[in-house]
Length: 329
Image (cartoon, rainbow, N blue to C red; front, top):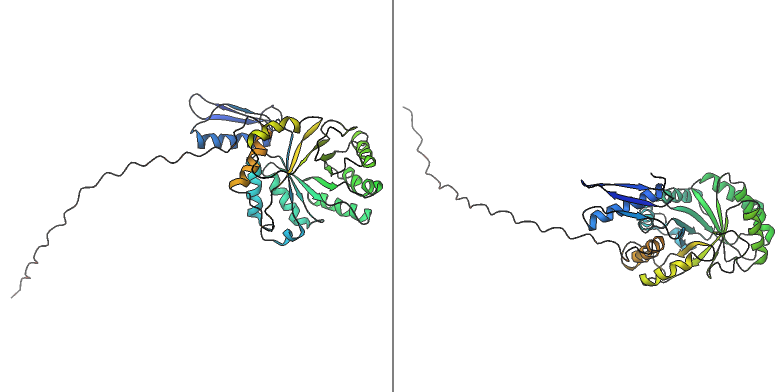
């Protein structure tokens, strides 16, 4: 660990071989170790590198439908472990699992713990709040108390009354006993809700943020970093076009972006190879550092093995006739 800013890392090779990897925090140290492993695979040695994030928030929003909750992949730890590994290698720092309803507590607790082990802040996405506000606040409070590694809640900023958000949601965040971020989606056009958010951020000192598909230039009254882009992009975008978009993702007080995970219709998510893996690599790596390579390093082919020296042929011994047995008188 070093005194560098969070999410930064340094690789310093030694003249005699080997090197030193440091990080400004645990996530930065993880990025440095992953970078060092990639160098060893592609180059066979370490080279000096200093990594620092250009975009503070680099998030993925994974939308699970009601039918997904009964699929084998959703309950598979192996699937989520491989998925979180993909995000960590791509240098995303947040996963938002958007569910159609309040989930089973034990399942979400396990996923939040697994995400934390790969340097990912876990946010739970929920639909627009509805029902009795006191009952909803009680369930959310119990969820946050049971699962301490849930770092945030996301809700749609829909048509629910303003007082409902205050009673059911903001009071939950205020009494959580730790920092829990509230992200409101599609709320930028509601003037009354924006006013409530401004009050929560500025006066109650609550970590509330807005996401907008059109950026943050029209969001006013909030501190810098309280808004970010909500993106939905196709697979196969050119790396150069993403590099050119990075300045916009950090402009107008934006803290970064959240991009929706690509999904194949009526099929389990495929994130481990081919175009899907490249989707995460280019969006995560290039938003962390636009100078990053457009593709993962390729491991060199193994060196050809020298053929084993030919052994001289061994001539089998000629069989000898057996001696006649001597007879004793």
